[in-house]
Length: 91
Length: 267
Image 1 (cartoon, chains in turn orange, blue):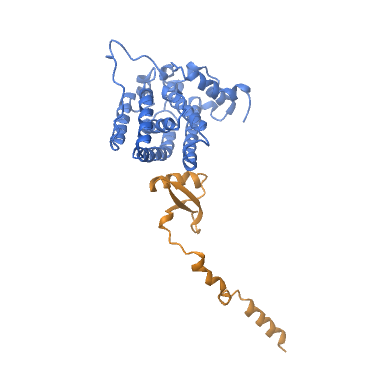
Image 2 (cartoon, rainbow over the protein chains, first blue to last red):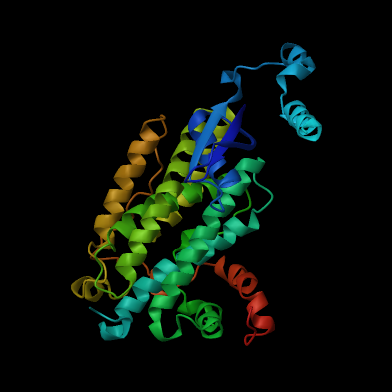
């Protein structure tokens, strides 16, 4: 058995979303079994089933350094505070 | 258009009952395996298929008497209130299903037959049957694809899997040929356009498909040999002509046990 990851997408302006995983003996059966395991109630209009071995993985050690980059997370609060200060200081 | 009552001698009703009774019994056996299939994903897939079969059964029963299509109590009475001799299912679907490979091989044999059978009903003259056949064929495409894929996988799966498949074919094939036993008045049903090809023609197509499928993985199906010449010793009547197999009594009692508690109940 191989493990497969399943993604579904609703019609319209929606992205594919990961919905879960399943075990199947081959690709064809993975597709057939994923249909009933994850989409039997019409949860999606399109489906991707991906053999986990084909996924390119970035682990925590690889992504970790980017968690420590507060200067890249600009939510506008610094600029907003400065504008507020300027307004308050205006004659 | 032909209504079931307009076809002489209940010929159309027999055709509908043969289909519907097959479907409901198959649905029953799938249901007995809920939660017990060899792995979770297959459990979900096969019970979904069983649910489809029960849906087809309901739709077919409703065509027998269009007047009670929407009345659940009357429909229940038609389905579960009949004595065993009023059923028209094939012996294949009456037989117990003690091992999963028996459910699986039955699924393969049955859904291959269904594909042929529904095809012959796509242009049926009976109101509602042609559109039901179209709808069923869409669902059948999944059933057949599932059965064929898993069959191919199991047949290539090693000694144990092949031995189990072979034993199940050995036991079930003699029962499965009865899926194409003609109903009592098939000529009348054919003449009225209820079905567009005879059981014999359908059986031949089914057999060719199955032989192709199995030969591809090196399995030779143990078809039962003809035992007699048709003229001197006609085939004894079986499921389609109202004769129930010994296994049916148990199945019938179980299938109707909830209905029998309160036939007037609305669920």
